[in-house]
Image 1: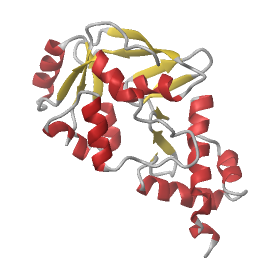
Image 2: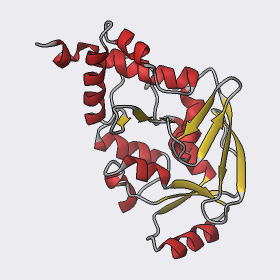
Image 3: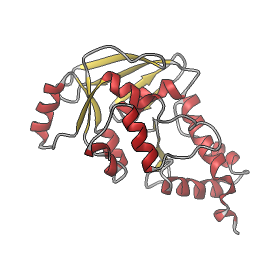
Image 4: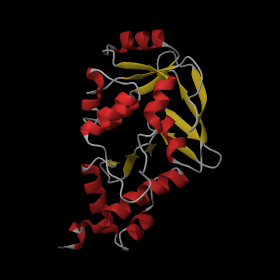
Length: 225
C-alpha cells in the first residue's frame, strides 16, 4: 500500500483537526497536519479527503478544512466566545454545541443577528441549563438533505427574534418554511450530538441512532426523518 493510500493515520488526522479547532479556534496548520500523519503532509491531505467522504470534515476547493462540526473556519452567522478562545459557530446548532463539547469552556457567549430583522442578539450558553429567552431557531433544510450542500445547510440554521420574523424572512426570500424550535429544544439537540468527537475512536451515528437522538430531544416528524 502506498503512503498516500495508508488509512492508518486517518483517525490521528481527524483528532488533530478537531483539537486544533477546540483549543485554538482555527483549523490545524500544515505542520500540525503533517505531525498527525507521521510527518507526511501528503498522507495527511489524503486522510482529509477520506474524512470528507465520511462526513467528518468539509473541505473547500483548495483542500482547506472549512468545517469540522461544530467548528467552522468561515463566518456563517455566529461567533462563540469562551474565556480564552473565540470560534466561528457554524450554525445555531453548532454554536450551542461548543460548550458541551469543549469541557474547558463550559459557558460561552453566542453572538448573532436575527436573520429576519437584523436585530443583534447575544446569549450566554452553558452545558448545564438551556438559556432563557423568546428567540427561536429556524432550520431550512430537512435532515435527510442536510449534507447535499452542508455549508448552505449550516448557513440557514439561524436564530430569529420570534416566529413572525421567520415568516417575514421566508416571504421576502421565497423560501418554504422548514422547522422552528425554541431555545430549550435547540439546547437539547446540541447537548450530546457531538459527544466524543475530540477523542480517538469516535464514530458517527447511523440513521436509526440519529432518529432516536432527535426524538429524545423532542424532534420528530418528516423534517427529521
